[in-house]
Structures are given as structure tokens and as C-alpha cells.
Amino acid sequence: MLWLTFLPALLLLISLINFLTIRTPHANSQIDEMVSIIVPLRNEAENVAELARCLLAQTGLTNFELIFLDDNSEDRSFELLTAAATGYSNVRILHGAPLPPGWVGKVWALHQLFEASSGQIIVSIDADVRITEDAVSKSITLMKAKALDFLSPYPRQIALTLGERLIQPLLQWSWMSTLPLRVAEHASFASMAVANGQFFLVRKTALITSGGYESVKAAVLDDVFLARALLRTGSHGVVVNGAQIATCRMYSSWSQIEAGYGKSLRHAFGSLIGSLFAICFLFLTGIAPLITLLTGGGWLAFALITGTRIFSALRARTRIIDSLFHPISSTLLIYLIIYSYLMRGEITWKGRAI
Image (cartoon, rainbow, N blue to C red; front, side, top):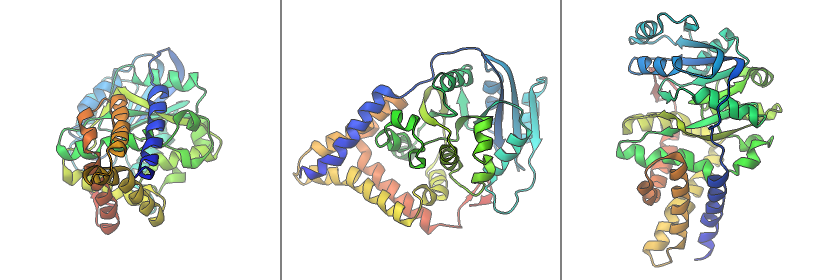
């Protein structure tokens, strides 16, 4: 069945091109612009101390401020954050205002942080992200060198449990194998937007022009929707390989994976039709190649799609062996898409209904 090999072959070609050309923040220069690093927090007591440590250790920034917002945490986040930030004059800790109707919690927190910031460059970081001491300066150096308005350094996704290892690598694979990054870098098509809000840099002027966080106030996938808004208003930016400067462990159990993907996947593809298209894509690129292999139809399609996963794993610095389980990963992601629709309105995240 040679027709089944066309799509995997195309994805392998895109993966190879991206593997060879994806940008990586590596050069470092002194950053003289005012930089605002903003961090929304809600029930992050286990992350606060280490997070503050790595952010306060940033080098290469002549002038930067670090602003945390405690979004009505129900644990010891504020107390621990206050202790970690004591003695630093460039750190501010805000108490989040009550969540207004029509806003998603994280976006409301980011909006308040942005309103309180004074930097020319805004760097937003999630509480579960850890960055090297030169991560921000290297990322800004790359953004300036390529004349970009925003940049999304994609952290290395830490995956320890079986569920994490089967699902998390698909995040980077999804854009490494489908989006020509060098084309997207200077394109103005919202459909080519890829971003990860775990670590995101944007010029203040570009963010204001796009409508700011208010333009995506109801978006569960605020990062992708913000990137789309930026592209629509004439800004340019791209996702880059941040595996060497940032790490993140999003989830630590299957129940967290279900809740995390359950709240977002129904929004990821634009509509029910888009979700059905995504399911078909996952079947054709993940399950069908295994079926052809097991039924004697040939090994080429399976080898090609495994190759795409290997290229992605090499750049993401994840386990190459997990590439062989791509059919299982695809099946689980199809389940999570369906689960996201079935559980609509019943999923909670950080103590709030989504």
C-alpha cells in the first residue's frame, strides 16, 4: 500500500528540514532593555522556592524586574514566595484580584502582571518551568538577532511515568513534523502559529498592538491564541528549541494528564470538524502504519513515521526508544481528544472548573 507511505514520507521530510534548521538560543549578549519577567502562581507551594532561585539567578540582564502574582492560592504559595524573595529589590509579589466573568484564570493573572510591568520585553514563565541562568538573555539575543517580535523557546519536557512518556513527546513532534519553521518565522498566517506559554517572550509594543491578554481572555490555549493574535496584527515570531535552556514537568500522573489535556484538547483544533480531522491524521500517521506492518502490507510507513519521532526526540532530548511506541501514543491521544469533549464542564484545574 504505497499510498499509505506518502503522508509519513512528507512528515519525515519536514522533520528532517526542521531538525537541521530549527533555531536554538545559544549566543549570549548583554541585554540593555528593561525586561519584565512575569510569573502567575496558583497552588504552587512545591515549586516556589526552586522557581524563584533560578529566576533570581538570571545573568546578562542590565535591568530586569521579577513580578509574581499569587492567584488566590489555597496552599502556602504566598508565604513561601515571600520568604524566597526577601532581600531582592527588583522583586514584586502581587495578590491576584478575584476572577471576573469571561476570563480564564491564568490569562487574568497574566493580564494583571502585564499591567503592573514596566519592561520593553515581557517574559512569561510557568511555575513548573526551570531555566538556566542565561536562558532569558540567550532567548532575547536570538529574538533581537532575527528581528522577531515574539519567541517561544520550547522547554525539554520531563517525562518519567509511562503515561508521560507516551503522551508528552507528541507535543513537540506535532509541530516538528508538520510546520516548516523557517517559513513560519516570517509568515503572517495565524494558522502557522505555534507557541508554548511555559516560556514565552514578546515585545511590549507588539503585545499592546495585538490587544494584549484581553484579546485571549477566554482562551484555555492562551499561548497559541496569543501567537495567532500577534501574527494577525503584523508581528512575527516562532517556536524554537529550548531544550538546552529550560525544562518542565507538566504532569506526574495519568490523572493529571487526563485533566490537563481534557481541559484543552477540545479547543486545540478550532472546532469539532477540526478535532475529527486531527483524529483522522493521528490514525493515518500512527495506527495505520502499524496495521500495515502487522498484516504484511510492508514496513516502510512504520519506519518513516518512527523516523519523524526520532528526529523530534533528538532535538527535544527525550528518549529515542519511546519513538517505537508511536502507535500507542497516537491511540491514547485520540482517546484524550474524545475525553475532552465528553468531560466538557466537569474538569477542574487548580481548584477551578474549566
